[in-house]
Image 1 (cartoon, one colour):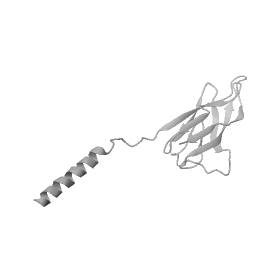
Image 2 (cartoon, one colour; image 1 turned 90 degrees about the vertical axis):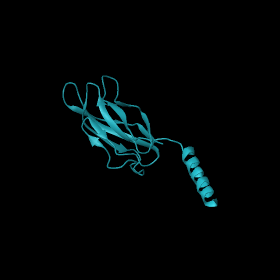
Image 3 (tube, helix red, strand yellow; image 1 turned 180 degrees about the vertical axis):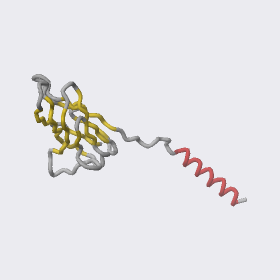
Length: 135
């Protein structure tokens, strides 16, 4: 009889422990989009958002927007002493570039380097200076 009571008490405690656990799904990583804009008239090149806040596990996709697009886009860190906080190499591409998953929290100043096509032909090199915040 004592054994049955002990088993019943143990089962009740296990059930109570399971019921007390929060039923939250793990966070799903996502791609944050940073839109890259070439100069237009007297308006200089820029990105939106200028300060992109993401979580560890997220990645960033830099995409060209507007009518004047880039021939090449690449991302570098401003501080050569900082390690790249994403899996994989520094991103580069033509009209878009993507990082791997973020691995390290912190604030990272980076540069977007691109070669913007001019409306009349040719291209001009441009550097934009935004920040990434990984929480």
